[in-house]
Length: 314
Ligand code: ADP
Image (cartoon, rainbow, N blue to C red; front, side, top):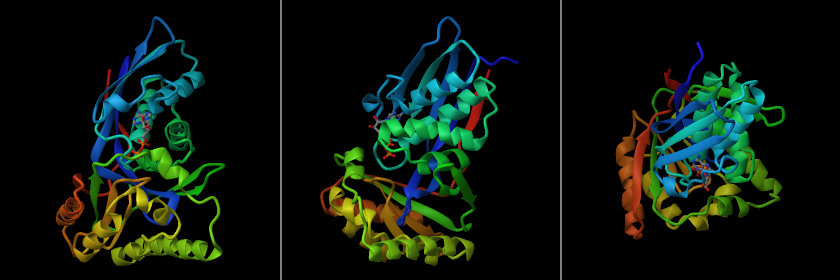
């Protein structure tokens, strides 16, 4: 059957989780982007419309929109001489550190793969969606798109060639997330990173990342939380998020196992063991902490969730 349209959704994701910079990512079960793709039979153009959260700041030109980049790439791979109309409904605010551009890229990849009958592997879909990330972040980081496509928790084990492992997190894992409403420049958050790191920082970060993974294999959320500290990336970005240390302290005092910047920021993510603490309460504690400093914010609580999927096809 030749399809005329496919709609897919992809989840918000949180990358890094402390020391796993550009390597760790987790899919969240709360916020989603929705991408509907239709064939244009008359010509080979790519048309993009966007509505929803922060739609006004998202480029419509295919080469600047992460879903558009994916569409161009997949049309190249396909032998079909058609164009694509892409309707993006944003459920994830762009530039908040929750993988907004990655979700559009992931949902577009999954939808177009189905529409054009390409039968690409999940790794190929991740590679394609990562090209989209190059346009939004200026760096081909695959952590958000890998989590958005595969779901759960992922580790990028090799960048070239791309290899990704997916791990199930302990069943009591929950996350509390707070997104401060501040002016934030995602590309600046990448440019402030040091080009070189001291050996002592490298040792510290390798130890933290190993601790996080050890916590997963031991089903021990407290140990995972101890692994969420980072001596390289977070200190370089901390000044971009006013009140970060205050919010972190309040969340830890309220029972979070670990707290760090989500992705490039400015959202902050806390790991919670649902047997020991209440993620919703911790999220509200973080809102209060920002409030004390005069910063308005929104909060969410989430569990690790599934990856992108087709929700409708005709
Ligand atoms: P974060 O991971 O912090 O949510 P993003 O990866 O969403 O940050 O980066 C936001 C940048 O990506 C913005 O400059 C935005 O204009 C650009 N962008 C390009 N295409 C999209 C898209 N389809 N959805 C969201 N942002 C997009």
